[in-house]
Image 1 (cartoon, protein in one colour):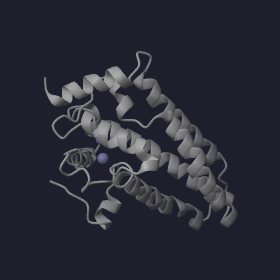
Image 2: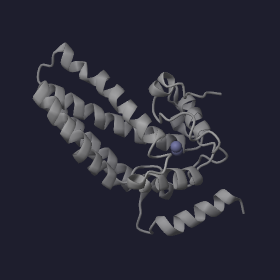
Image 3: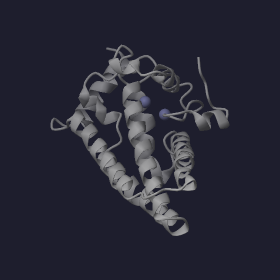
Amino acid sequence: MERIEIFRQRFRAENISKNYRGFIHLAFINVWCVAGIVICAVNIHHPTFWQWMVIPFTFLYTNLFEYIGHRFPMHHRYNSLKAVFKRHTLQHHHFFTDENMNCESADDFKIILFPPVLLIFFSVCFVVPVSLLVYYLFSQNAAMFFIATTLTYYLNYEWLHLSYHLPETHFVYKVPGLKTLRNLHHQHHNHKAMDQYNFNITYPVFDIIFGTLKSR
Ligand SMILES: [Zn+2]
Ligand SMILES: [Zn+2]
């Protein structure tokens, strides 16, 4: 049996319980993020041009957050963040390699999507404090735009990463540009390149800025 197959079977046996349902995991992420986005949208009133500009600034901030989080704690063993390194480098990168990028069933979503507890932690510990700061420094509209953009980004991250681990023949690949993004992530899953290239999972803005973009 191939090494990756042995790893997958062991990971599933040790980490995916019989009660796990990949589509419920995916639904939780969607409901949490969409609910947050809707709450923010109904609390935005007559936004000005500069309040709208919170969207592109927040996009850049979250893209940088994604880049740094992936390049450093997910690929380097820091004592306080060992669990992040284990889940990403030792598990995700061994479950999926550049030779086999495809999940086999919804059970495998467990090793692609972030755990629900992380979404709650991320919302409470990162989004809420920064949005309070934005609220006090600027306005309620700016804070609402900030929260809505981070939740949209998070949801987009999960959708994109999940689609990269679906077969290339899947209907989602009718979406223009998706194959190009998948190719970047596919190369990142090569063990020789994983700590050098393509750290943006979504859009490679900071890979371009920091010179770590590798496209075939
Ligand atoms: Zn991946
Ligand atoms: Zn990685």
